Image (cartoon, rainbow, N blue to C red; front, side):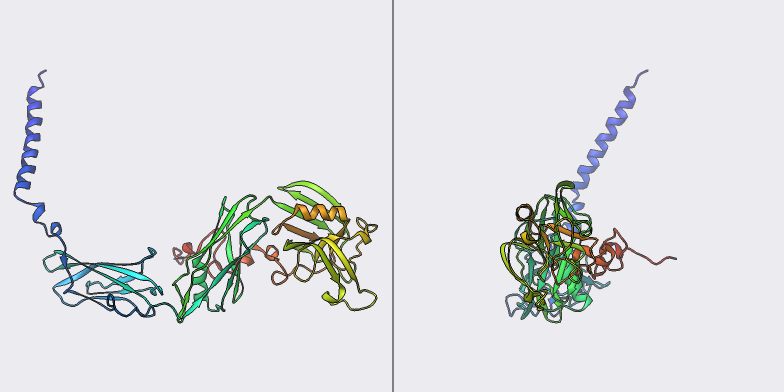
Length: 417
């Protein structure tokens, strides 16, 4: 069969298409379309609510862009500060007015780009740069603890320079404070301890040997009435091995684990009746080779219970004075009876080993004591004694969200029909 005629037809069609394309170009088709022209200067068409190079703009006032005649309209507006943050805004349906829907940042430089078109559909553009005034009233945030290596139980803290009470203002602060871990932790959210203090922890302890970074995007951001955020120094922490010391007060023994494996079991004595050691999870706050312990400093003034002792190898777990320490005077009771005034006592050799093994942020948990539970806040870090569901309730962004969801998810929720 001869296929030559069909080949000629295809080639003829190809030539025709090329010829038509060349003809269209020669006639100047696309080049004469309004969108192919260089944008005209829309200076005479656009009016801004601010001026360039003049007095710094009050960040409490909105930004407005208006088309002052009906011969054209605004098609797009972008306003971005020097840090790359875009200012949210809204354009009217007729394209005659755009206005910001979010507060301007304080002490920032904005660049505004406006796209327009005239009545013939030709594109125009206008550009403006302006500065906002610095805030007179600022909120400072200080992350804690100090940079260094900590245990898996160490919460991240944020101390505010002044009270933040309203839910709306707290939401702004929470959104701006970020905590990230590598490898990633399971969940994690801020909890408002009080109007000036926030704590951050994941659902479970931090992953062993992870890296933690806390940062703030609050600088210049409006928090409340004339209150703006200031710059915050980032925080970087290293998390070490998972060290957990579990003290069974009724068995009179402490068992220490490293990354889930038992590494030591130590006979101890804990608080006697009337001075029972607190139950619950505590976090190592610090270590002191020598401490002078006096009963009067913790409210014990009676002659029968008073004491004044030199104490060595003292590992602090509460601010009120609960330690794990050397107690050579009670070695005969260690492993058999509880005779202390609330601390966990052990032999000098064991206390020295414990002192050298643990670090700030490591877990010290007491079980089966007749004492009360460790306070959640205010006497050290009792954060891990708060149920995860209740912990989330301490966040204005997470409260009310279902497990595993995020604040962004709530925006997608719709009522059932």
